Image (cartoon, rainbow, N blue to C red):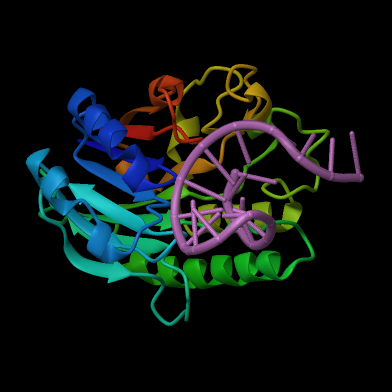
Length: 261
DNA sequence: ATGACGGAAGTTTTCCGA
């Protein structure tokens, strides 16, 4: 079983790349972020022809998330229950699992707020959103021992995830306030599946379009797959796939792929 | 210090992302 997450920065623009990627990487589940389209524009037919069911939750211009799955998912939730949100940022569903437990894997795909800069309204919204997410995930964990929380977190764990930790100290994606919320998710009983394995130095999932960020390995690791211990015990690999970042007109993010036994 | 690049809206320039 393989699960992946990818911020595509406009599904309209990136659809051909997503379809190519799925052909080369026939994962079981793919969470997409930044669809940047209303629901009526979602390319459900092309995705069905590629062999995937889909749940999507979009809006005009910004945000928007989807969950693609080879097997239909159940118990779909869009956005954080009880947290009033103007923006389409979360889609969750339960994926059938082949193990002996007979329970599915609860998968939450999320596009965390960017936050712009500390001290701004957008940063305050990010903080409130992170608290809302955590309260909800705490409840989800009670019901689902097998849970995967993946997406574009817009937060780095530590200096290892940052190409220029000195220059970016206390900057957005690297502040102590944001990292506190990330650690609070870990404290609920989740693990960063990427760090379960030895990884290359300068492992990033996003590179700025400007200034040859990708070519110069100037990036951030802000796309994460957090998993419960039951899932972690089955993990055999977690990798960032830089191949699509080398496409013409790439997304600024690369997919992250988790493989389970 | 600023803006670089890329996408959307939509029309000429602005907002936003990270």
